[in-house]
Amino acid sequence: MTESYLGIDIGTSGVRAILISGDSRILASASSTLPASRNHHDMLCQQPEDWWHAVLDCLQKITLLHDCSGLQAIAIDGTSGTTLLTDTRNQPISPALMYNDIRSADLLDSICSSAPQVIACNRSSALVKAVFLYQNYAPSGEYLIQQQADWIQAKFTGKPGISDWNNALKLGFDVEQLEWPDWLTAINMGSRQLPEVLPPGQRIAVISPQIARQTGLPESTRLHAGTTDSIAAFLASGARIPGEAVTSLGSTLVLKLCTRKPIISNAHGIYSHRLDQHRWLAGGASNSGGAVLKENFTLDELVSLTENINPDTSTGLDYYPLPSKGERFPHPDPEKVPVMQPIPDDRAIYLQAIFEGIAQIEKHGYDLLEELGGDKVLSVRSCGGGSANTVWTRMRERIVGRPFVPARQTEAAYGSALLAAGKL
Image (tube, helix red, strand yellow):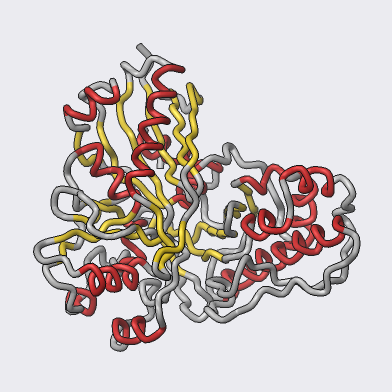
Protein backbone atom coordinates (compact mmCIF):
# COMPACT_ATOMS: atom_id res chain seq x y z
CA MET A 1 0.00 0.00 0.00
CA THR A 2 1.53 3.31 -1.14
CA GLU A 3 1.02 6.34 1.11
CA SER A 4 -0.49 9.06 -1.08
CA TYR A 5 -1.89 12.60 -1.06
CA LEU A 6 -4.46 14.17 -3.38
CA GLY A 7 -4.68 17.72 -4.67
CA ILE A 8 -7.81 19.02 -6.42
CA ASP A 9 -7.81 22.21 -8.49
CA ILE A 10 -11.20 23.78 -9.26
CA GLY A 11 -10.60 26.00 -12.28
CA THR A 12 -12.79 28.14 -14.49
CA SER A 13 -13.06 25.65 -17.36
CA GLY A 14 -12.36 22.39 -15.58
CA VAL A 15 -11.30 20.39 -12.54
CA ARG A 16 -7.95 18.62 -12.24
CA ALA A 17 -6.77 16.13 -9.62
CA ILE A 18 -3.23 14.90 -8.98
CA LEU A 19 -2.23 12.06 -6.66
CA ILE A 20 1.33 12.11 -5.29
CA SER A 21 3.41 9.79 -3.18
CA GLY A 22 5.02 10.64 0.14
CA ASP A 23 8.19 11.64 -1.74
CA SER A 24 6.19 13.94 -4.07
CA ARG A 25 6.16 11.73 -7.18
CA ILE A 26 3.04 11.93 -9.33
CA LEU A 27 1.16 8.63 -9.14
CA ALA A 28 -1.93 9.53 -11.18
CA SER A 29 -3.76 12.53 -12.60
CA ALA A 30 -7.19 13.21 -14.06
CA SER A 31 -9.24 16.10 -15.39
CA SER A 32 -12.87 16.89 -16.15
CA THR A 33 -14.33 19.85 -18.06
CA LEU A 34 -16.85 22.35 -16.70
CA PRO A 35 -19.64 24.14 -18.56
CA ALA A 36 -18.69 27.68 -19.53
CA SER A 37 -19.63 30.52 -17.19
CA ARG A 38 -22.94 32.07 -18.21
CA ASN A 39 -24.38 35.55 -17.97
CA HIS A 40 -27.57 35.27 -15.93
CA HIS A 41 -29.48 38.49 -15.12
CA ASP A 42 -26.25 40.49 -15.47
CA MET A 43 -24.34 38.05 -13.24
CA LEU A 44 -21.42 35.92 -14.43
CA CYS A 45 -22.23 32.54 -12.87
CA GLN A 46 -21.53 28.85 -12.67
CA GLN A 47 -23.56 26.11 -11.01
CA PRO A 48 -21.83 24.73 -7.87
CA GLU A 49 -23.16 21.22 -8.52
CA ASP A 50 -21.24 21.22 -11.81
CA TRP A 51 -18.03 21.63 -9.81
CA TRP A 52 -18.94 18.68 -7.59
CA HIS A 53 -19.86 16.41 -10.50
CA ALA A 54 -16.50 17.21 -12.11
CA VAL A 55 -14.70 16.43 -8.83
CA LEU A 56 -16.46 13.06 -8.59
CA ASP A 57 -15.54 12.34 -12.21
CA CYS A 58 -11.87 13.04 -11.44
CA LEU A 59 -11.98 10.84 -8.33
CA GLN A 60 -13.45 7.97 -10.32
CA LYS A 61 -10.67 8.28 -12.90
CA ILE A 62 -7.95 8.50 -10.23
CA THR A 63 -9.17 5.40 -8.40
CA LEU A 64 -9.19 3.46 -11.68
CA LEU A 65 -5.61 4.54 -12.40
CA HIS A 66 -4.13 3.88 -8.95
CA ASP A 67 -4.90 2.02 -5.75
CA CYS A 68 -6.00 4.76 -3.31
CA SER A 69 -6.19 2.56 -0.22
CA GLY A 70 -3.16 4.44 1.13
CA LEU A 71 -4.65 7.89 0.63
CA GLN A 72 -3.82 10.04 3.64
CA ALA A 73 -5.18 13.50 2.91
CA ILE A 74 -6.81 15.84 0.39
CA ALA A 75 -6.42 19.60 -0.13
CA ILE A 76 -8.41 21.74 -2.55
CA ASP A 77 -7.74 25.00 -4.34
CA GLY A 78 -10.26 27.17 -6.17
CA THR A 79 -10.49 30.41 -8.08
CA SER A 80 -9.97 33.34 -5.75
CA GLY A 81 -13.13 35.40 -5.29
CA THR A 82 -15.71 32.97 -6.71
CA THR A 83 -18.48 33.29 -4.11
CA LEU A 84 -21.84 31.78 -3.18
CA LEU A 85 -24.29 31.69 -0.29
CA THR A 86 -25.42 28.40 1.26
CA ASP A 87 -27.65 27.29 4.09
CA THR A 88 -26.07 25.71 7.15
CA ARG A 89 -26.36 22.26 5.52
CA ASN A 90 -24.14 23.43 2.61
CA GLN A 91 -27.02 23.67 0.12
CA PRO A 92 -26.56 26.62 -2.30
CA ILE A 93 -29.17 29.37 -1.92
CA SER A 94 -27.67 31.66 -4.57
CA PRO A 95 -25.80 31.35 -7.84
CA ALA A 96 -22.01 31.21 -7.63
CA LEU A 97 -20.65 34.55 -8.82
CA MET A 98 -17.40 34.03 -10.69
CA TYR A 99 -14.06 35.60 -9.78
CA ASN A 100 -14.31 38.07 -12.71
CA ASP A 101 -17.90 39.14 -12.07
CA ILE A 102 -17.94 42.89 -11.35
CA ARG A 103 -20.57 44.58 -9.18
CA SER A 104 -21.56 48.25 -9.17
CA ALA A 105 -19.41 51.10 -7.89
CA ASP A 106 -22.34 52.35 -5.77
CA LEU A 107 -22.49 49.03 -3.93
CA LEU A 108 -18.75 49.15 -3.29
CA ASP A 109 -18.99 52.70 -1.95
CA SER A 110 -21.81 51.78 0.43
CA ILE A 111 -19.82 48.86 1.84
CA CYS A 112 -16.36 50.37 2.08
CA SER A 113 -16.94 54.05 2.86
CA SER A 114 -15.24 53.66 6.24
CA ALA A 115 -13.03 50.67 5.48
CA PRO A 116 -9.22 50.69 5.34
CA GLN A 117 -7.27 50.00 2.15
CA VAL A 118 -7.87 46.27 1.70
CA ILE A 119 -8.31 43.97 -1.30
CA ALA A 120 -11.89 43.21 -0.19
CA CYS A 121 -12.80 46.76 -1.18
CA ASN A 122 -12.94 46.43 -4.94
CA ARG A 123 -15.79 45.69 -7.32
CA SER A 124 -14.77 42.10 -8.05
CA SER A 125 -14.05 41.06 -4.44
CA ALA A 126 -15.76 38.21 -2.63
CA LEU A 127 -17.12 40.69 -0.08
CA VAL A 128 -18.93 42.83 -2.67
CA LYS A 129 -20.33 39.69 -4.30
CA ALA A 130 -21.52 38.39 -0.93
CA VAL A 131 -23.34 41.64 -0.09
CA PHE A 132 -24.95 41.68 -3.54
CA LEU A 133 -26.12 38.08 -3.16
CA TYR A 134 -27.51 38.79 0.31
CA GLN A 135 -29.45 41.79 -0.96
CA ASN A 136 -30.86 39.93 -3.95
CA TYR A 137 -31.48 36.44 -2.53
CA ALA A 138 -32.54 37.55 0.98
CA PRO A 139 -31.83 34.51 3.13
CA SER A 140 -34.49 34.31 5.83
CA GLY A 141 -32.38 32.57 8.46
CA GLU A 142 -28.75 31.75 9.13
CA TYR A 143 -26.60 31.35 6.06
CA LEU A 144 -22.96 30.92 5.15
CA ILE A 145 -20.73 32.91 2.81
CA GLN A 146 -18.48 30.45 1.01
CA GLN A 147 -15.72 30.48 -1.56
CA GLN A 148 -15.47 27.86 -4.28
CA ALA A 149 -12.85 25.75 -2.47
CA ASP A 150 -14.71 26.08 0.86
CA TRP A 151 -17.89 24.61 -0.61
CA ILE A 152 -16.17 21.63 -2.24
CA GLN A 153 -14.26 21.02 0.97
CA ALA A 154 -17.54 20.94 2.91
CA LYS A 155 -19.00 18.46 0.40
CA PHE A 156 -16.26 16.05 1.51
CA THR A 157 -16.61 16.58 5.24
CA GLY A 158 -20.25 17.60 5.73
CA LYS A 159 -18.94 20.49 7.86
CA PRO A 160 -19.46 23.85 6.12
CA GLY A 161 -18.20 27.12 7.54
CA ILE A 162 -14.43 26.58 7.33
CA SER A 163 -12.07 28.52 5.08
CA ASP A 164 -8.36 29.35 4.91
CA TRP A 165 -6.19 32.48 5.07
CA ASN A 166 -5.91 32.70 1.30
CA ASN A 167 -9.53 32.18 0.22
CA ALA A 168 -10.85 34.42 3.03
CA LEU A 169 -8.65 37.40 2.07
CA LYS A 170 -11.01 38.85 -0.55
CA LEU A 171 -13.92 38.44 1.85
CA GLY A 172 -12.19 40.86 4.22
CA PHE A 173 -10.28 38.61 6.61
CA ASP A 174 -7.32 40.43 8.19
CA VAL A 175 -4.36 38.17 7.42
CA GLU A 176 -1.98 40.30 9.49
CA GLN A 177 -4.04 40.22 12.71
CA LEU A 178 -5.66 36.88 11.79
CA GLU A 179 -9.19 38.00 12.61
CA TRP A 180 -12.38 39.36 11.07
CA PRO A 181 -12.12 43.17 11.45
CA ASP A 182 -14.75 45.26 13.22
CA TRP A 183 -15.59 47.34 10.12
CA LEU A 184 -16.54 44.16 8.30
CA THR A 185 -18.67 42.61 11.02
CA ALA A 186 -20.63 45.89 11.25
CA ILE A 187 -22.00 45.54 7.69
CA ASN A 188 -25.72 44.71 7.69
CA MET A 189 -25.95 41.29 6.07
CA GLY A 190 -28.58 39.54 8.17
CA SER A 191 -27.83 36.34 10.06
CA ARG A 192 -24.73 35.47 8.12
CA GLN A 193 -21.94 33.32 9.41
CA LEU A 194 -18.39 34.24 8.52
CA PRO A 195 -16.22 31.14 8.24
CA GLU A 196 -13.68 29.91 10.72
CA VAL A 197 -10.36 30.66 9.02
CA LEU A 198 -7.43 28.24 9.27
CA PRO A 199 -3.85 28.30 7.98
CA PRO A 200 -3.52 26.60 4.56
CA GLY A 201 -2.69 22.94 5.04
CA GLN A 202 -4.10 22.60 8.57
CA ARG A 203 -6.13 19.46 9.22
CA ILE A 204 -9.90 20.01 9.27
CA ALA A 205 -11.63 16.63 9.54
CA VAL A 206 -11.85 13.21 7.93
CA ILE A 207 -14.19 12.71 4.98
CA SER A 208 -17.77 11.82 5.82
CA PRO A 209 -18.75 8.13 5.78
CA GLN A 210 -21.23 8.88 2.99
CA ILE A 211 -18.49 10.33 0.75
CA ALA A 212 -16.19 7.42 1.58
CA ARG A 213 -18.87 4.99 0.39
CA GLN A 214 -19.68 7.08 -2.69
CA THR A 215 -16.06 7.48 -3.83
CA GLY A 216 -14.38 4.37 -2.48
CA LEU A 217 -11.79 6.47 -0.65
CA PRO A 218 -10.58 5.32 2.80
CA GLU A 219 -12.77 6.55 5.66
CA SER A 220 -9.61 7.77 7.39
CA THR A 221 -8.83 10.26 4.58
CA ARG A 222 -8.27 13.72 6.03
CA LEU A 223 -9.29 17.06 4.54
CA HIS A 224 -6.73 19.83 5.03
CA ALA A 225 -7.46 23.53 4.63
CA GLY A 226 -6.85 24.58 1.03
CA THR A 227 -5.82 27.68 -0.84
CA THR A 228 -6.43 29.64 -4.03
CA ASP A 229 -5.47 28.42 -7.49
CA SER A 230 -2.62 30.88 -8.00
CA ILE A 231 -1.03 30.07 -4.64
CA ALA A 232 -1.32 26.34 -5.33
CA ALA A 233 0.46 26.99 -8.63
CA PHE A 234 3.17 28.90 -6.75
CA LEU A 235 3.72 25.94 -4.43
CA ALA A 236 3.83 23.54 -7.39
CA SER A 237 6.54 25.57 -9.11
CA GLY A 238 9.19 24.97 -6.48
CA ALA A 239 9.53 28.67 -5.60
CA ARG A 240 10.07 29.07 -1.87
CA ILE A 241 12.34 31.92 -0.80
CA PRO A 242 11.84 35.72 -0.80
CA GLY A 243 12.59 37.12 -4.25
CA GLU A 244 11.34 34.07 -6.13
CA ALA A 245 8.31 34.82 -8.32
CA VAL A 246 5.74 32.86 -10.29
CA THR A 247 3.72 34.03 -13.28
CA SER A 248 0.54 32.07 -13.97
CA LEU A 249 -0.50 32.19 -17.63
CA GLY A 250 -4.02 30.84 -17.61
CA SER A 251 -7.18 32.59 -18.71
CA THR A 252 -5.80 35.54 -16.76
CA LEU A 253 -2.28 36.75 -15.92
CA VAL A 254 -1.42 36.33 -12.22
CA LEU A 255 1.86 37.40 -10.59
CA LYS A 256 3.09 36.22 -7.19
CA LEU A 257 6.34 37.34 -5.53
CA CYS A 258 7.55 35.76 -2.29
CA THR A 259 8.35 38.59 0.14
CA ARG A 260 9.30 39.12 3.77
CA LYS A 261 6.47 41.58 4.37
CA PRO A 262 3.00 42.24 2.93
CA ILE A 263 2.48 44.75 0.11
CA ILE A 264 -0.96 46.32 -0.36
CA SER A 265 -1.93 48.95 -2.92
CA ASN A 266 -5.53 49.27 -4.05
CA ALA A 267 -4.37 51.90 -6.52
CA HIS A 268 -2.50 49.16 -8.38
CA GLY A 269 -4.61 46.11 -7.52
CA ILE A 270 -1.78 44.66 -5.41
CA TYR A 271 -2.52 42.53 -2.38
CA SER A 272 -0.64 40.02 -0.23
CA HIS A 273 -1.49 36.51 0.90
CA ARG A 274 0.06 35.12 4.06
CA LEU A 275 1.98 31.96 3.21
CA ASP A 276 3.16 31.22 6.75
CA GLN A 277 4.45 33.15 9.76
CA HIS A 278 7.50 34.48 7.88
CA ARG A 279 6.61 34.57 4.17
CA TRP A 280 4.08 36.48 2.12
CA LEU A 281 3.00 36.25 -1.51
CA ALA A 282 2.49 39.72 -2.96
CA GLY A 283 1.01 40.28 -6.39
CA GLY A 284 -2.08 40.82 -8.45
CA ALA A 285 -4.25 39.41 -11.21
CA SER A 286 -4.70 41.07 -14.60
CA ASN A 287 -7.71 40.33 -16.80
CA SER A 288 -5.25 39.98 -19.68
CA GLY A 289 -4.02 36.50 -20.51
CA GLY A 290 -5.10 33.36 -22.28
CA ALA A 291 -8.73 34.43 -22.61
CA VAL A 292 -7.63 37.13 -25.07
CA LEU A 293 -5.73 34.59 -27.15
CA LYS A 294 -8.66 32.17 -27.13
CA GLU A 295 -10.99 34.88 -28.41
CA ASN A 296 -8.75 35.75 -31.35
CA PHE A 297 -7.05 32.49 -32.36
CA THR A 298 -7.85 28.79 -32.60
CA LEU A 299 -5.53 26.32 -30.88
CA ASP A 300 -4.20 25.23 -34.26
CA GLU A 301 -3.45 28.85 -35.18
CA LEU A 302 -1.59 29.42 -31.92
CA VAL A 303 0.69 26.52 -32.78
CA SER A 304 1.23 27.29 -36.44
CA LEU A 305 1.56 31.07 -36.13
CA THR A 306 4.00 30.80 -33.23
CA GLU A 307 6.41 29.01 -35.58
CA ASN A 308 6.61 32.21 -37.65
CA ILE A 309 7.51 34.50 -34.73
CA ASN A 310 11.05 35.66 -33.96
CA PRO A 311 11.00 36.20 -30.17
CA ASP A 312 14.13 38.35 -30.30
CA THR A 313 12.47 41.11 -32.35
CA SER A 314 9.67 43.56 -31.58
CA THR A 315 6.58 44.45 -33.62
CA GLY A 316 6.63 48.06 -32.41
CA LEU A 317 2.89 47.79 -31.62
CA ASP A 318 1.81 48.97 -28.17
CA TYR A 319 -1.11 46.72 -27.22
CA TYR A 320 -2.97 46.35 -23.93
CA PRO A 321 -4.77 43.04 -24.57
CA LEU A 322 -8.01 42.45 -22.65
CA PRO A 323 -10.91 40.09 -23.42
CA SER A 324 -13.42 42.86 -22.60
CA LYS A 325 -13.67 46.20 -20.81
CA GLY A 326 -12.22 46.28 -17.30
CA GLU A 327 -8.86 45.66 -15.66
CA ARG A 328 -7.79 44.64 -12.11
CA PHE A 329 -3.97 44.88 -12.08
CA PRO A 330 -1.61 46.69 -12.54
CA HIS A 331 -4.01 49.44 -13.73
CA PRO A 332 -7.30 48.82 -11.86
CA ASP A 333 -10.06 50.39 -13.90
CA PRO A 334 -13.49 48.85 -14.57
CA GLU A 335 -13.77 51.11 -17.64
CA LYS A 336 -10.36 50.30 -19.15
CA VAL A 337 -10.84 49.23 -22.77
CA PRO A 338 -8.68 46.75 -24.71
CA VAL A 339 -6.02 48.23 -26.97
CA MET A 340 -5.32 45.89 -29.89
CA GLN A 341 -5.19 48.29 -32.82
CA PRO A 342 -4.02 48.63 -35.50
CA ILE A 343 -4.51 45.03 -36.64
CA PRO A 344 -1.73 44.01 -39.05
CA ASP A 345 -2.50 41.95 -42.14
CA ASP A 346 -0.07 39.25 -41.01
CA ARG A 347 -1.76 37.07 -38.36
CA ALA A 348 1.62 36.00 -36.94
CA ILE A 349 2.53 39.65 -36.27
CA TYR A 350 -0.88 40.18 -34.66
CA LEU A 351 -0.28 37.21 -32.33
CA GLN A 352 3.22 38.45 -31.53
CA ALA A 353 1.89 41.91 -30.65
CA ILE A 354 -0.62 40.37 -28.22
CA PHE A 355 2.13 38.22 -26.69
CA GLU A 356 4.24 41.39 -26.29
CA GLY A 357 1.35 43.32 -24.72
CA ILE A 358 0.76 40.65 -22.09
CA ALA A 359 4.51 40.49 -21.37
CA GLN A 360 4.60 44.28 -20.89
CA ILE A 361 1.83 43.98 -18.29
CA GLU A 362 3.88 41.26 -16.56
CA LYS A 363 6.99 43.50 -16.55
CA HIS A 364 5.07 46.47 -15.16
CA GLY A 365 3.62 44.28 -12.43
CA TYR A 366 7.02 43.11 -11.22
CA ASP A 367 8.41 46.64 -11.49
CA LEU A 368 5.62 47.86 -9.20
CA LEU A 369 6.13 45.11 -6.65
CA GLU A 370 9.79 46.08 -6.31
CA GLU A 371 9.00 49.82 -6.19
CA LEU A 372 6.40 49.34 -3.44
CA GLY A 373 8.82 47.62 -1.10
CA GLY A 374 8.90 44.03 -2.24
CA ASP A 375 12.02 41.91 -2.38
CA LYS A 376 14.04 42.22 -5.58
CA VAL A 377 12.81 39.70 -8.15
CA LEU A 378 15.57 37.07 -8.28
CA SER A 379 13.86 34.67 -10.66
CA VAL A 380 10.56 34.02 -12.43
CA ARG A 381 8.93 30.61 -12.87
CA SER A 382 5.95 30.11 -15.16
CA CYS A 383 2.86 27.93 -14.92
CA GLY A 384 -0.49 27.63 -16.67
CA GLY A 385 -1.23 26.75 -20.27
CA GLY A 386 0.75 29.65 -21.73
CA SER A 387 3.95 28.49 -20.04
CA ALA A 388 4.25 25.62 -22.56
CA ASN A 389 4.85 28.08 -25.43
CA THR A 390 8.65 28.30 -25.62
CA VAL A 391 8.66 31.17 -28.12
CA TRP A 392 6.44 33.28 -25.88
CA THR A 393 8.61 32.36 -22.88
CA ARG A 394 11.74 33.67 -24.64
CA MET A 395 9.87 36.84 -25.60
CA ARG A 396 8.65 37.31 -22.02
CA GLU A 397 12.13 36.86 -20.57
CA ARG A 398 13.47 39.54 -22.91
CA ILE A 399 10.69 42.00 -22.07
CA VAL A 400 10.32 41.29 -18.33
CA GLY A 401 14.08 41.55 -17.86
CA ARG A 402 14.46 39.01 -15.03
CA PRO A 403 16.01 35.54 -15.03
CA PHE A 404 13.52 32.80 -15.93
CA VAL A 405 13.98 29.34 -14.39
CA PRO A 406 11.98 26.14 -15.04
CA ALA A 407 9.09 25.34 -12.73
CA ARG A 408 9.22 22.04 -10.87
CA GLN A 409 5.59 21.43 -11.83
CA THR A 410 3.04 23.71 -13.49
CA GLU A 411 -0.28 22.29 -12.26
CA ALA A 412 -2.07 23.93 -9.34
CA ALA A 413 -3.43 20.51 -8.33
CA TYR A 414 0.16 19.39 -7.67
CA GLY A 415 0.61 22.35 -5.31
CA SER A 416 -2.56 21.37 -3.44
CA ALA A 417 -1.29 17.80 -3.17
CA LEU A 418 1.90 19.16 -1.55
CA LEU A 419 -0.31 21.14 0.83
CA ALA A 420 -2.18 17.94 1.75
CA ALA A 421 1.19 16.29 2.42
CA GLY A 422 2.25 19.13 4.73
CA LYS A 423 4.95 20.41 2.34
CA LEU A 424 4.20 24.12 2.43
